[in-house]
Length: 262
Image 1: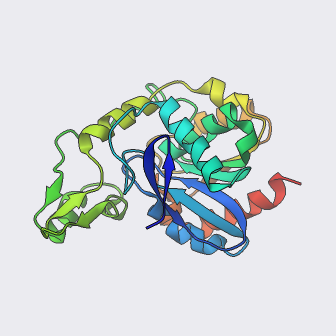
Image 2: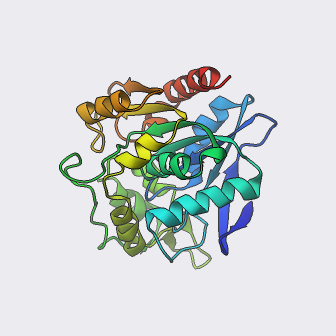
């Protein structure tokens, strides 16, 4: 199991391997690095995708501070510890905010950014429901079928099921604490225009037509206000573009990376 120590925490990560240009992939809330496996396969061999489990998620350490500064600093230290700088950075949702905040605050660590389906404003009125109430979610399930039944009501069941694992006592347990996820979500809610506009890196903004976090007009405003920003809209997809259309996602990312730096 690949792990690295970052800020006195154990961070697990997925590494597609190879000698390709490093790409740091940052997942969203409730996720883990493995969510990018299909995209990582499609970007090989030119690109080596490294996807950490962010704090409180996956197999990385739980607990602690779940504010924006903590996430950005973790990612910065991860890039340095892994020798990835400067890396292309792709980020989904929570990871997308972290990506553009990383570029704003540590510009030397990033080459170019892909921000997937999240805005410069993650609060009302741009986002109707910025926090999903998961405080009553169970921590474990008697069997896999029970977990599948529970998450069948979510818009992307397989995304959540990636974080359900079987323990030695045969129960199936979430790799995240729902109480932590409430803090994670609240910490990501805000008006982040200063960070979005600060970095000079080329950026590709990906939006899903069925997005519940990134309205069309807000996406257009983000691109209009930031030189070097491009917008690609994925038709008939939801918030998890990288899962619903990994071929189209990888093609857009590959084309953007090829033209974003000299």
